[in-house]
Amino acid sequence: MRHLIDILELTVEELDELCKKATDIIANPEKYAHKCAGKKLATLFFEPSTRTRLSFEAAMYELGGNVLTMADAGSSSAAKGESVADTAKMISCYADIIAMRHPKEGAPLVAARNSTIPVINAGDGGHQHPTQTLTDLLTIRAIKGRLDNFTIGLCGDLKFGRTVHSLINALVRYDNINFVFISPDELKVPDYIIDELKEHNIPYEEVTNLETVMPQLDFLYMTRVQRERFFNEQDYIRLKNSYVLTPDKLDTAKSDLCIMHPLPRVNEISVKVDSDPRACYFEQALNGKYMRMALILMLLEQSGDGKPEPLDGELIVDELICDNPKCISSTEQELKHMFRLVNPEMGICRCVYCENKKVRGA
Ligand code: CP
Image 1 (cartoon, rainbow, N blue to C red):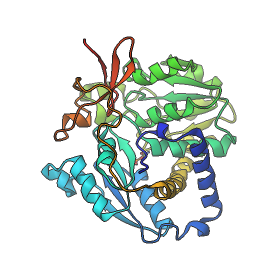
Image 2: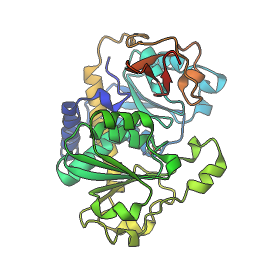
Image 3: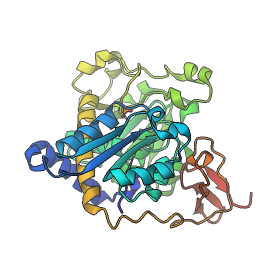
Image 4: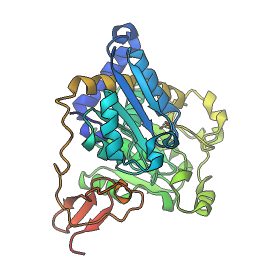
């Protein structure tokens, strides 16, 4: 059974294949118009979405398939307390593939381990958003013709912005990518991602000022400050206007800069920037539909015997308890807490659902 929970589950070769497939779909849509005839996609969205849910649904319709949709948690039995695991078991009876968005980090992983059909992570809390990354990669490739040798600035809420986390994880595998992280101190990239960059000697810098780094960027990836992830509304209010991209701030930018944003934007890119030829974010959103078509085809072609993923297949440490209230392990009935041992010398472990760090024996 093949799922997509984390972008790292796809090899560089598979990412290339998906980009090529999406490009072919754009050029020859009629070739793909019946590829999913008789198949059903279930979109299970426990959090709001415009682009991801509707582009998944448009993707399945354009492949000749059908869609079962659950657009909000309140209309499902989750509102009565049904677990993610039971929900996944049920949907496996009705559909052929699931796209799930959930506020709890690791929820799609729990779904995958209890499902007999492929599960796609359509965004889990502030953790990961791998299909947005597929969209981003197709956009970068379409514009520059390659996925290596560039400097990318990621700006805004790098702590809670799940699209940023997945995109960094994808790009570290390409040659000569320089990362510039632009954020307030409170919204810096999480340490589990910084640890990976350090381990692989990937160059990065962390700054607070966008204007000073603007001239060096080939891509500027703006992000929204994620109000829904804050514990404290006052913190959100203080940080929400940290970066607002206006036309004057682009005066020092490269003429072939590409401005990206996963959207939705709130106010971090002025609408006056939309008419700048360097603004690519609406093209980026369109690419999402084609990449999701390519992904649905790949996962359905590669789905195996329908057996659920083993619950403890990668269990390394099970004596630790995750205390992250945003982790699915904080709410899911009888879910076994599991950690990966990422640094045996120091006993550092990370929760398999949310990456929360614990030290063994501490
Ligand atoms: N980029 C993105 O995930 O948008 P939605 O929240 O509208 O799906």
